[in-house]
Structures are given as C-alpha cells and as structure tokens.
View 1: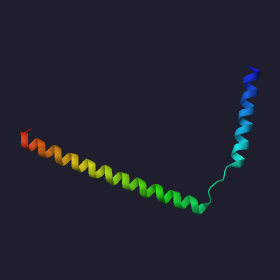
View 2: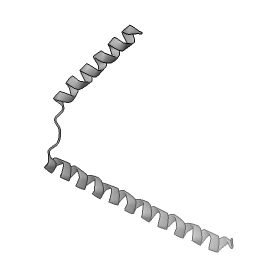
View 3: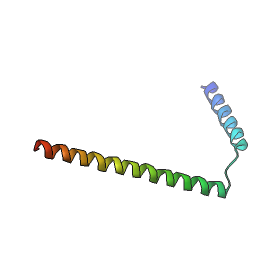
View 4: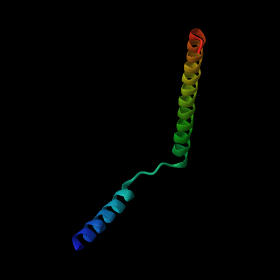
Length: 68
C-alpha cells in the first residue's frame, strides 16, 4: 500500500514538472484555432446536410418508382 502511495506521489510530481514545460497558446493563437474549428465544424455539418438531402431524395425516388 505504501508503494502505491509513493508511486502516486511520484506521478503527480512528474506531471506537475511536465506541465511547467508546456507552451500554452496566447490569445491570438487561441482565436485562430477556435475560428478554424468553427469553420471545420460548419463544413462537416454542410456535408452531412447534403448527404442527408441526397439520400432522402434517392429514397423518395425509389419509393415512388416501386409504389411504396
């Protein structure tokens, strides 16, 4: 049990040391990354919308052809 506590303490200390080495983004980088993510999400949503509309149109056509 004591070994597990010592391992946990070592892990926390090493994690803290690693967090000190991290280069955090400044506000400008954060704005740019947020903008890219929003644009990418909108593009993916548009692609899904087009796929949904296309599949619905094809299914309606098939149902009209076979009288379902």
